Length: 375
Ligand SMILES: Cc1cc2nc3c(=O)[nH]c(=O)nc-3n(C[C@H](O)[C@H](O)[C@H](O)COP(=O)(O)O)c2cc1C
Image 1 (tube, rainbow, N blue to C red):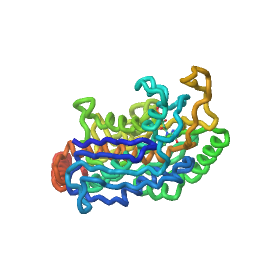
Image 2 (image 1 turned 135 degrees about the vertical axis):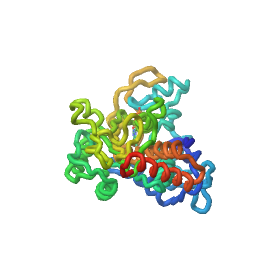
Image 3 (image 1 turned 45 degrees about the vertical axis):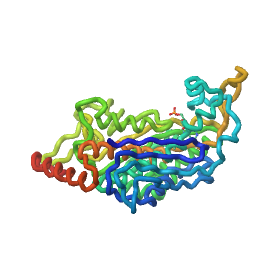
Image 4 (image 1 turned 90 degrees about the horizontal axis):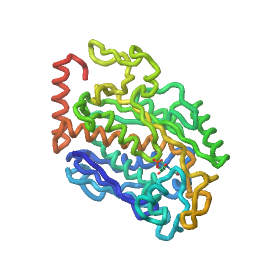
């Protein structure tokens, strides 16, 4: 079973990710992990922290001479920002954050003990663990990309479906947006929000190619691939909605316009299902979207209460992003990579990546023989 955990606070000493259950023999390139960490930090609309930190992964265990050895992989990412031990306590909880609910739950009296861990700084550790999963998936020919499809109500008009095109077009956009015109209007929306002391949210899309059919299962709720992916995406800070394939749009169309006809040589007439049916991958690309709410910390803060005095007060202000949708897309890639890597290991097993790949190849051969489809 593949699993991972993270530890660390936003202004703690460091972040740690532990990935347990990864097979041996996976080629590990730290530069690849660091490239994903850089992408998570980038994006027009991010706050000042990005100028202080330049995240680097340090692998502490589980990798020897550039290959995984099957034991738990610990990754460390140092924090360069100031540590919270010397920071002022926070008694005015910020709306839209874990501050108030966390204080009530944990019986604490300083919001900092909550906000430090609730902060999306934690996603750096998730991205590092996810990058390792991507490296494993690479062996199996699975490739993942994300891009920004909407910010502050400005949406792209057309989206490429090839991971290579997404990567190429995103590479020249500070918002990881494939549509130049829409990208410019999104930047204007972010600038407008900044001038008003406000923030904006948006939507990112994740596309995965090379997914074998048969990941996940219809037989039990917690084995469904759609459910596992949705949970992973919803667990990203500030994500408030997930769509798979056509998602909410499918509710407005008749069934004849939604479902994807099966072609005689394999493949589908369309991919509105987003690469899965009945909670099982069907061999088409996985396409899903996540909706991110506007950043909660406002330069013009909302009303709150000072919990020491019980009196009305304006919310505490931490240095903050205006918009982090492109970064959330990168975190979502990591979340998807983890789920898919776990599903590949569930289905094909093996303790060395060669064994997993042998099982995968023999399964695909069998599927081809039984269906005549090109998988
Ligand atoms: C990549 C990323 C960066 C974020 N940056 C900020 C930020 O700078 N300021 C902020 O208030 N919230 C930020 N958030 C969102 C908060 O972490 C989140 O809204 C908060 O922890 C409450 O969780 P919830 O929105 O899921 O309820 C960010 C989220 C992500 C994914």
